Length: 84
Image 1: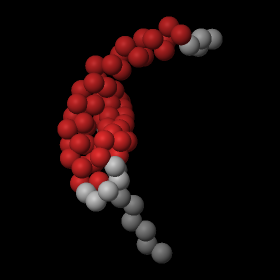
Image 2: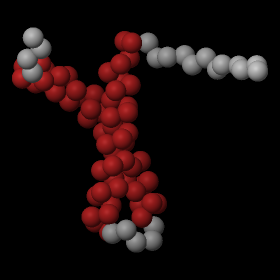
Image 3: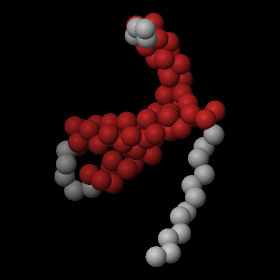
């Protein structure tokens, strides 16, 4: 059995905050878009289209916000959590 393995090149560790922000923003923006669209206009026809439209605005905003807020949150966590 001949199996070829595709090599996946990982992103360098120095970019961890940006990768974290990208995934956190993407997931949270999508979930919030789904909830807010449902709360404002219901789950009727066109729901998915409205969610995608909201997401296209929410994702870049969320990404920038996570980049700004992450250092503050890390500082607060470090102040409150006992690491010993």
